[in-house]
Length: 402
Image 1 (cartoon, rainbow, N blue to C red):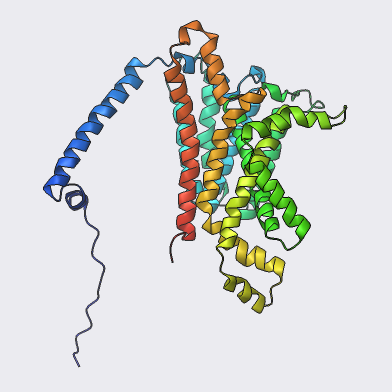
Image 2: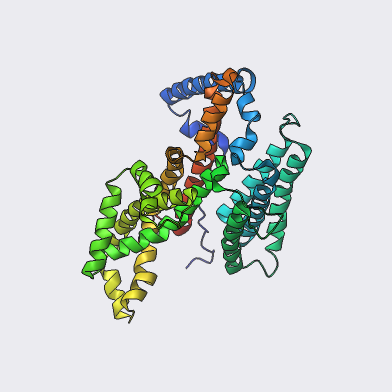
């Protein structure tokens, strides 16, 4: 036998940027030609876009209506409540980034950079005053504070979840107000609007439709005829009707069946409609994941002595949800974009505010491209963030890998 130690086999070093470019973009001659043509095309396109955005476009309707885009007709003297909510979110993202890291850390940094940059944009001080700038600059500081609070005993997953739950309750209390508190007068939900209303409709719809959809999917697979029949009728009926009809039913027809002294808030009715609509589609997404679980998983759980509830909760449901993460997130994104239909029932969501801004000044009627591009950019940021979080979650859970 040889006395020399066995050679250590190491994986090859990753290629450098020059080798990667040569291999992927300039290897055969036709790839080189395509790369040059594509780079030339992108250069002129991006140059034209940059020139139009920075020098030719007129962003006056946007810069003069930032408050309307942010909160609609919410009373200006009460906008500090929205600022407090933003402070809570910034602090909790910093805390979540320290505790859970990963995607939350990316979002915490992005939120701090975005709000800090917004505070430093050289707008006219009459449009964004010193107080508003300082209010915005406090958010990056709160992200930093939340991150360092995560090093203390508060930095536990259960406390962070409790903080997010309490923040939603405080958010509703701040926005609606309390008659018993003089400095927190009630504000009608009809004055809510803009990004604030769009965000609330989406968050409530997503948070409420997910558990309802899971229960409907489990109920559809139930052996109890009444439960199974109710879930099938509910799902197929809602999925066979457009969202516009559901919104009209909850906004116009629902009050006709309520007692005279019972009035449901208009925003709450829209939230209920979107929740009901999204839960039916969510149920079908989850049911697809449940059907993909092999029968052997259930039999193995029973062999270990688990009952039906434990088998569903601990074995079947986690695997089913893991399989349909892309479909679930796609449904969340669709629901966020469907919030623009709330204008049909008289709510001033973000797109409705954009139309109102254009119609408020005759000189702005021809500037619809700038306004709607601004709205499109806002929607893209939120939808891409959900898609990015979905991809990170899939990578963490190993979706698509064996």
